[in-house]
Every structure is written in structure tokens, then in C-alpha cells.
Length: 494
Image (cartoon, rainbow, N blue to C red; front, side):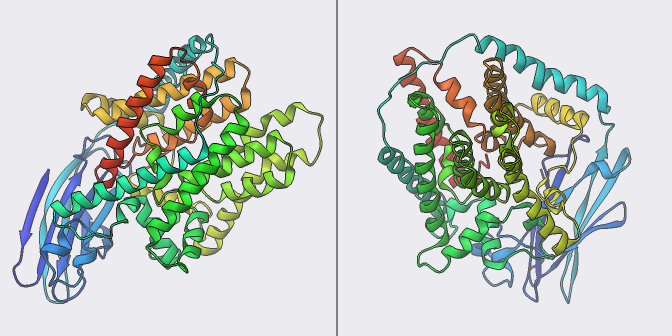
């Protein structure tokens, strides 16, 4: 709901809203923009008459640059401030928002939010265990009774390469058409870097700065690779996309080596509605490639390859430490000191990033603290997660129900793998599914679930009827292009 739109004709213009509308049990954000003709304005937010946040606008807000070209910071007019309601006592709290420059100060308006009681920890834990553990465990047991279908579904690496090239171009054209209609100038390839992609590009250009704590939420390997790409011509977005398309093609080759004659399941996985992230300026392709390279090195007992791929995965994403679970089968062998290297190489990568953060910020877990800037929590609380889940169910959101269904499917298939004694794949997939929940947010959950590749391949191979298989592939393709378009237009974040 828009709270206030204020225009001061000569100097300052500003606007803000609370997003999403506060429900008293989950975090929200103050989102808006502010511009000035005199200098870059300052935004000041107080809660209960105490200063909560003070800073400059820092990101590009849609259409502002085109509507107000004469203002100094119209290119980066947006501000976004996370409100962690759990820092406040129960009851009603008042928000005041001001903007000012060296000549004027304007009051944008006030609003209120109520901090309601959170479901107690252990009560929430009981319900969360039932929803996200017992139900998937039950369905997983049923799924485990079905056998996979071995097949030689005929498609090759060039097919995968061309498919994702097409998806990449489709995203660019979708974003360009949308931006042209709404009068927003964009680089033709810029839709590939929507949302997190812009952060990776910014880090590649400017590095990690204490004044920009949001950047520390992103692990360093991918921005480092983008920084290397800067020496080549063409926009960074298209270079990153081509790099990721090459990686997803190589990942397909590794999947075929790991899952011999499971092509149907592999194609089911690669055509998922959210696999367009494999061509965007995101870490999905890099992380999948390193994970598969690590898993392949474990299967072939290549210690040097596992050290390299495991370490690099550990500095690619925070859940890189989970890939150690894919080497659990080694624990069944006779104890050898070198076998521990398979287990610890991803952890070493993670710890090296923590050590850098300690040197840079004095906080080795700064990547957790930075999550609050994106509306996520730092610590897990089952009562809060239950409240957020109930709130989503009460306010029907088709994307939430889709995400919820996919998560239950992935968890059920993960437990089915455990019942089939494929422990390393099953436990890894369970951990990969639970891991995003620690942030107390369902935002981007579908993208995070892509890392649980064994479950999708397993489930895709359970389908025996060929007509149903082709129907599912067709529905997946339609959904893939639909969500690609939503992402290109800045509507869907994953």
C-alpha cells in the first residue's frame, strides 16, 4: 500500500511504502526513492522517535531516471531498509521517514506496525517437524517402493548448449520488450543480471566495501571470475551468460557420467521451470558444475580433483559446505587419513572466506549479518517459520503454493533415496532442501532447491509411460519460458 507521494517542485522528491504489508509476525522492508537537484539526498528513518537508519539511496529504481533526468541521483534513487520486527517489544510502533539535502528537509510521512507474539520455539518446532519432516518421510517411503526406469533418451551436449543459448536470448528479448513499453532504458543483455546478478556485477567492479555491507552476503568466486572477464570486450552480462551456458553443458556431460542411462531424469531436471537461472548472472551453473565435479571425483577416487572442486565450491556459495555429504560413502571404507580430505575440502573453502571476513570486518560470519539487508533472518526459529508459513497460506499466493509443493516433492524424493540406501545423495538432498529455511524466508526457494539434483533425476526416472513423459516435458518447457519472462521483467526472483 502506498503511504505517501510527495513532490517538492524545486528540490526534493520522495516516496516510500512498506513491503510487504506488516502482519506483526514477519519482517518487512521500507522501500522507496528520493532525489534532489542540490545534492544526493539523505534518507532518515526513525522508529518510536529513535533513529533506525540513515543513509543515501543506493540502487536504480525503475523509471525514475527517465521521469526526472534533471536530478543528480536519478540513476540510483532507490533505498531499501529491512525492518527486523523481532528487535522490538510487543505492541504498536511508529515509523517516520524524512529526506533532506543541504538546503531542505522533507517529512515523507508516518506509519505504524504492530509486533505480535511469535509462536513459541518448541510449539513451532513440533509443527515444522510435522510439515517438513514427517509428511515428506511418509511420502518418501511410498515413493521408494517404485523403481527407476533405465533409458537411453537420445539427446546430446550440443542440444543442451543450444537450448540454453535460446533461453538466454529469450530472457534478453523479453526484458527489452517490457522495458521499451514502460520507457526504461536498458542494456539489451541487462535482464540477465536482474536482482542478485546486479550485486555480483557491482562486486566485480568495486570489490567488497565496509560501506556496502550487503555485498558480504555474496561469496567471492563468481564475482572474481566476472572481474577477470572485464578485460574482454562486450557487456559483462553476456560474457557471464556464455560462461554459465558452457558450465551447464559440461554439467550435463558430468551428469551422464554419474547417472548412466538416466537421461530421462536428467532432462526432467534440466527443463525445470527455474533452470533459466543456469544462464543468468547467478552462481547456479558454477555451483552445480563444481558440485558434480566433486561428486565425480569422489566416485572415481580422484583426491586432487576433489580438493580443487570442493574448495572452490566452498567459496562459491554458503551451502557449498553441504557437498561434503556426497562423500559419505568413503566413510564405509577402511580408515585412511587422506580420505578425510574428501570430506573437509569444501569446509576449507568456507573457512577461508570466514577468515577473510574476519580480517576485513572483524566478523567471520558477516555473510549472515548481511542477509538482514535482503529481508532474511540470521538465525533459525521454528515458531517464526511457522508464523510465516501460516501467513502465506492465509493470503493465497500461487507462487508460494508452487514453491511449497516443489519443496515437499524434493524432500519426499530425498527421503526415498535414503530408504533406497543411497545415503550420500539422500542426506545431501535433505540438507540442501532444509538449508534455505534457516533464513526464515521462502524467497528464491525454488532456485535454492535446484542444488538437490539427485532428487529431480530420481523422480524423473520413475515415470514409465512415454506419453506422460512427453507431456511433462512440454509443460516444463512452457513453464520454463513463462518464468524466464517474469524474471526478465523484474517480477519473479525465484
